[in-house]
Image (cartoon, rainbow over all chains, first blue to last red; front, side, top):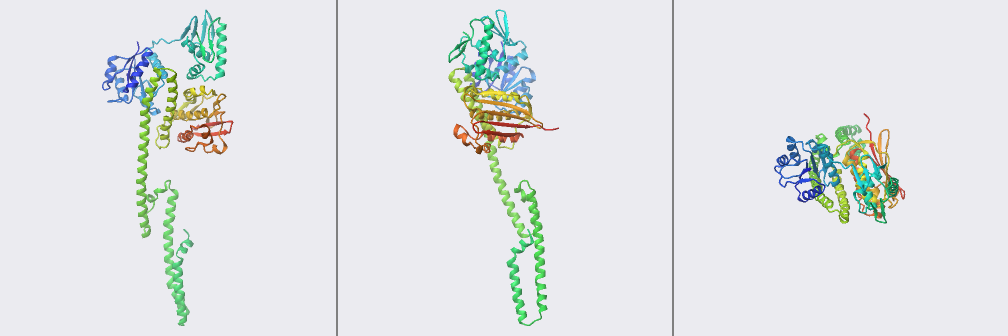
Length: 223
Length: 333
């Protein structure tokens, strides 16, 4: 199991972040005293450290430098100061990444995953998603069903993966669009309909009988 | 200072001498004394007098010409007391003294306000960073308790954040200090981030976005540029016609600049308002129509662009749409 140490002096953030990361399957350690962080990190041998800058006793930069003297554990610095200068300073102290407060939790997760993947090299990336007998391959953009395979476009891939991840629940058009937009695919309303039609046609061609259903004025669902 | 002006001012003095001289001449004539005596007296009286006045004029002219020259060449005119030569005549000395004292007092006064302002700026900056912690907590609470309600709260939180950003950049724009780093940047990721951050508005208002070729690289500060583009896109979204809104983003590379243009098909800006949109606090007709207009956004964009050495242009046709262009100059080595 991957262990993450959160060094953060604000109680709410510490607790909420703990809950949040635990939800995604990480083991989280959150010290509540800040005078012996380097020793603490040394003792617990975590896979990653989330380090706040504004801390009592020593600041994050100092702690980062101290940890770096003995260890190469990945460190992500979290700070509310967000100028390019601060970013440079953080990276100069030996941190692996720099995230500004208030962070988007999905971005934080992505950073954590990317760094752990790089350092451990043993991640289990979810390259395929399955729904009944349908397999969606995220890395080469193809769907297969009972031995038939066809390629899908980036948009179709995202739509299908969003529906598979939420299988059994209705996904509204707005939710679907927001998911696409956060993946940098700026699709408008008409485009979504077009993509949906094409995706359905492809699933039909694969020989799948029951797939995406439209729930009038609610959205779409993979039952 | 001309000799005529100088003499005009001493007209009463000269005239009184003349009147005295004429009275004296009349007396001499009445006493039947030789007319040559009058001429002699004239010479003895007026030649030294005029010569004295002339040398005084030269002296004064030299002093004031120099002073004017100093003022003309000074970037900060109020430093004249530091730069001028100490005058050698008594009136000059007195004035010089008074000027110096007034100047010193002014400097103290200016410093007082400068200190107050920089204190204010520092406070705002600390405040902005402090407020980010509770916002970060709120965000985490929202993410841990996802529901329709928290989604709406998140949407409002985003607005709060963007107002806070505005305060921070406002205090930065007023100051001579710099916290930006200019380096080579690619436009595309910055534009994408901004659109992503505003995605909720785009989706809710059903606004389409067409992104052209924005692969170009420019030299600027990423954070500042992101803020500027965010303000412009925020405006475009605000003034877009709902349902059929369209925002086009494109860039063109010219011989000596790169232009990033952001174009909407919204309500546009009237001619008589267009020239004033970069003024601080100007909201104009559109501000009255849409509301929620502070007149700060575009003003800040202009200020920040000037600091970064970028151009900012706005074109608009009432009822047709607005096009804002950011111009990145390309230096020639």
